[in-house]
Image 1: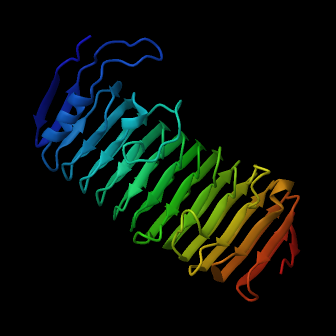
Image 2: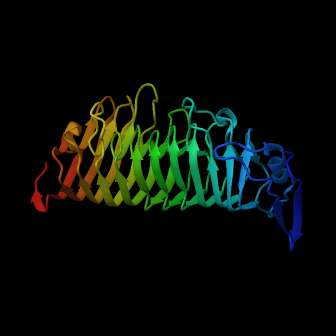
Length: 364
């Protein structure tokens, strides 16, 4: 069936692109490839204009790119469904772009991939905002923030990826995530990662994140970075640590960490993989010449950490160094493991106001 023509309607400077319904598709089958028509509409936009999609499913076999600055993509409940994992990305390369009310999907029946054409949604332009966006499957990460500045993610949901849910790297700075949710990700739920060869990520705020299960990896992680604030977390059923603050050695060689604040929330049933010994929270320095310092974790409730995790909280300096690590107001409930393991120089970790099943304890 041929693709119906695309009509652009200009009203008061706003382009509303009415993409006509092609026809009802058989269940679980892809319809006509609309890569070319979608890309043409994105390319014809002028800065500041809006494209509004029909509430239906659009199939694309190639990468889609947004290169015009300041445009608005209103999904109107539509789905952009990739049919080829190797070219499944939607890449936002221009600054000032906003995307709202859309679902993005990709095949997940092949191997895990990791290139820019494989992450479902790539943010490379500065000052990009996502609102009420859902990623339902990705061959790599769900949302990949690649060195962008001033990004804003509001009520973004990512599920069933083969890699991280939301991954910020490449010197991403001055970003804000409000109410992100990840479910059943193939790796970390929400991750800030700074490799030693890149600028460090910095100035990122994550508020009310929900991580519901990881098939591998951790819940929320800062693996190299500066000045990251994380508030009111809800993390459960993670393969590794629910919260992971680290500088890693080979093969990743990530940067130092400093100025991380984690305040409020819950971690439940973290570190479920018996072959991975993290605990519910792990602060780790494993890269020679790098450090993890000025990290404050407070007002967390940690519950149901399994015996195979061996500890609830761990601080481990291995090749790298740690300093000024503080834990305060930590409530431990129904954990069958020791509250705290510190394998680091004396005086580098401070603790206060720990309770175990409601009773104050001294974990030093």
